[in-house]
Amino acid sequence: MLLSERRLRRILGVIWVVDGLLQLQPHMFGMNMINGIMGPMINSQPGLIARNLAWITSVTQQNLFFVNVLVASVQISIGVLLVTGYWVRQAIVGSALWALVVWYGGEGMSMLLTGQGGILTGAPGAVLLYPLIGFAVYPREAPAEPLTPEHYPTLLSRRALTAVLGCLWMFLGLLQLQPYWWQQGQIAQTMRSMTGNGGWDGVLVDPSLNGMASVVAHSEILVNSILAAVCFTIGLALLLFRGPKLRWALGASIVVSLAVWWFAEAVGMIFSGMSTDFNSGLLLILLALACWPQGAWLRATAAWFDRRYGWAPPAGVRPQTAVGPKPAATGRGTMPRTKGAVIAVLVAGAAAVGAMAALSIYPGLPAQGERPVGASVPPAASFTRTVKPYRLSLRLAPGTVGPNQASLIVTDGGRRVVPGQVQLIATMVEMNMGTQFISMKPARRGTYRGSVLISMSGQWQLVAVVYLHSGRKLTVTFRPRL
Image (tube, rainbow, N blue to C red):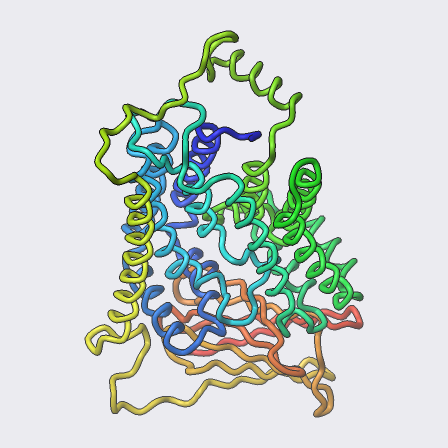
């Protein structure tokens, strides 16, 4: 294979370390993390899940410094162990458990239950791909520490990893068949929602994203059809092809993943100061490289590179292939124990998710802004502004402190108007609570919805920016006291 087990493990470790360092960025310790990352994931989630995620967001907001330091410490520790080769098994099992927690509590299960998840939004979630790669470097036999051999038997073989990658592409194709992606404007809006995050993104990434969004805006049904077909084709090719044909399928996987990573995921927003990981595009590229069969010229190049930089024994010296001392015969192999470890990870992950759900519905721990049982529920807050000849109506539900559902309707002489793009910018007037940039999604004709977090009571400023198909831009400011 192009990437040996040791090299793949070290690359995975470096990515874990970088993710941990990204968590220590200054923006992560302010309200921008709550408003820009955790708040939007509540939008359109099923009732119980939305309630649970709102509680997690509230707890994170109240303990923001501790949560960031904890996340960074865990991820850096996992990465260091994988790079150095110490406690590799424990690190991979721990990373799988941690990935499940982050996938649920930090990513809202990549919006898969909302009907809005797709390859353009990073589904099924980059954090789920970390343990998948981890199982491809998980030593099946008890390793000597540090784990130094270039090749060793692993829990998930490369052929099995190729099959998993093929199934993943098939799943991504199915996600693109959801009704949400057949609505006009969704693909272009998804691309534009990744712009305007500040930092170097505005120079390096935003121009290409805006340009691509303009190109696909007028033929989105065709674009989505092609995208779904490409996903299914790559998936089938990875499942069926072997030998030289497999390289073509893996090459197509890399090219499409790179295009999605750049034009839909904004390179993980790593230049904006608000990124927590590289997003799934880069992990899909790494998965394809991990499955790439090594040809003769690649094998010779890799051998020269390893000898040049001291990563492999000199030419003529037989490399070590054993992972460690061969265990004494006990009448049973090591495979049952590895299966047990995987089952333990799944059970522990389900227990962690269940514990969070139980805590969120426990009567003593209501979600932020929630009224006690029996208390009156205030009506939703509604506001109206006019920019002739248009009338903009904004509604916040429930209109209290905590997560709110914002709905915006644009009318012209009583008739609803369908804009090209709608953005809501929320800031608190009386105190710096950060700025929320909410990309409103079309719910039905003329109605756009998004999730806004009212973190504390007081005077708020909500700026609605509406881009009409005629090219006109409407900017309306609402200043409610909530």
